[in-house]
Structures are given as C-alpha cells and as structure tokens.
Length: 282
Ligand SMILES: Cc1cc2nc3c(=O)[nH]c(=O)nc-3n(C[C@H](O)[C@H](O)[C@H](O)COP(=O)(O)OP(=O)(O)OC[C@H]3O[C@@H](n4cnc5c(N)ncnc54)[C@H](O)[C@@H]3O)c2cc1C
Ligand code: FES
Image (cartoon, rainbow, N blue to C red):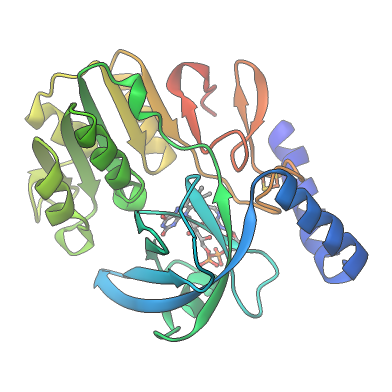
C-alpha cells in the first residue's frame, strides 16, 4: 500500500514538474542548501565504454575547492525532467568517477556526451557505508554495477588497516568491471558469472563460498534479489545499499521510501545505505 502511495506521489510530482515556476524552484534550491546539497557544474573529461553497455564517466568540477561528500550524485540531462541518480565510484579533489550502465533513454543520452561538454549535478547526496563498523575484517559483496560504490569503501577500509575480501557477481565475462581496481587494493577477490564465462559459475553467493572469507562485518550493493540472497546466506551485522526510482532526490517527495523497523525511510536522504537488521525486505 505504502509503495502504491509513494508511486502515486512520484507520478504526480513528475506530472507537476513542467508547471513549476521560478518561485517554487527558488524554494527547492533553498531546501537543497539547507540539507547540504549543492548544484555544481562539471566538465566531462572522459565518457567511454569499459564493458558491455557500461561506461566510465570522469568529471572535473568547474568551480575550485570541490571535495566529494555523500554517496551519490543526481545528474541533470537536457530534455529530461528528472535527474538520474548515480553512485560515485572514485574521487579526488575537484574530480569524480562514475560507472554507469546504459539502460534507458537518460543513460543513452548520457552515453552520447563527449569530453568538454558540461553536466549539472546535485552533489552531497545520501548516507554512505560506515567503514568504522568493521572491527578487523570485512566482506564486500557486489552484484553488477553494485560494485561501484564498494570500491571507495574498500579503499577506506584498507587505509584503516582492515582485512578486506571482495566477492563480485556478473551475468557474463563481458560485463565484468573493476576487477583490476579491487585486486590492487583488497586482500582476496573472487568473481562469479552466471554463464561461467569468467571465475566461478553462479552468483555472488557462489563467489563468497569460493572465498571462504573471515569477516566481522559485511557490506552489499546490487540488485535487490542478490542482496536478499547474500543476507539470507550470511549471518552477522551488515549494511545494504538500496535503490529506488527517485523524484526530487532531496528528501522532499517520499517517492523513494522503503520499509524499515523504524517506519518508512527515504532512500535518497536517510540512505541509500541502511543496516541490514533494520530493513524489511519487500
Ligand atoms: C542511489 C542510487 C545509485 C545508483 N548508482 C548507479 C550507478 O552507480 N551506476 C548505474 O549504472 N546505475 C546506478 N543507479 C541506477 C540508475 O539511477 C538508473 O539506471 C538510471 O536512472 C536509469 O535512467 P534511464 O533514463 O537510462 O532509464 P529509464 O528506465 O528510461 O528511466 C526512467 C526513470 O526511472 C528512473 N530509474 C530507472 N531505473 C532506475 C534504477 N535502477 N534506480 C533508480 N532510478 C531508476 C530514472 O532515473 C528515470 O527517472 C543508481 C540508482 C540509485 C537510486
Ligand atoms: S526522491 Fe524525493 S524523497 Fe527521495
């Protein structure tokens, strides 16, 4: 029922968007600023395919002094009312790296953009993974592009002196991304593909089985069905990164809410990362 209400809210928000006038837009901007979100202009420095329908997008901030915070960015694309939320996979002062899959019209338009073109982003969005939840050893389990936000987490955990095992799952070898980047940082890595064309044949859970990792905390990101399977297979505390279609991306419309033990929570504002223990899986 809640989901139905959320979807209705999102649809009515989408329908009203073309009618929004400058006064309302000013209110939205004030709200963004109140919540630490910022609109920023970036220049594309790279936008090229790295795997099947998958692109790496490298962006340089046009204003000086930009430092990444949050978990994801919301990208405005010409001709599309709604922004597209994408996780940040790497960052340095003044720059961001994003990995995205071309799935629909928005990401198709994004994939056609070239270095030198500009993008307007909402930055400072979302609550990310908590590396300090790991005492000494962590397991990271990613499915498809769910691997992307796990890479900066892996780097943070290693910088804090923790042992990190990584299990990644893809459909086929052509979809595998970030293998080299994880291998350079983590202590143990296993990859599974559904068709067996690379690594272990099967799912992320099969890659975990092959790794036999020791860990006191785990983190997972990917399709819902995969995260449910991981959480069903593994005991112990964990964080999961949830995904939902977004309207405002700023905590205003409740279009992205999910069910938790403490009531409905907004994935864009209270998440996307939640403790496994508090999520009520749908
Ligand atoms: C917090 C968060 C982080 C994400 N990180 C990544 C990432 O790092 N790489 C990546 O490839 N994808 C990521 N996604 C999914 C990505 O947002 C969608 O694939 C993208 O918005 C699809 O846009 P489209 O116009 O091509 O598809 P369409 O299907 O044409 O889009 C129609 C509408 O639905 C929304 N939508 C469609 N699929 C999704 C989805 N899975 N999640 C949320 N909204 C969706 C679109 O934003 C748009 O408003 C993330 C989603 C969320 C919520
Ligand atoms: S998208 Fe509007 S509250 Fe999350």
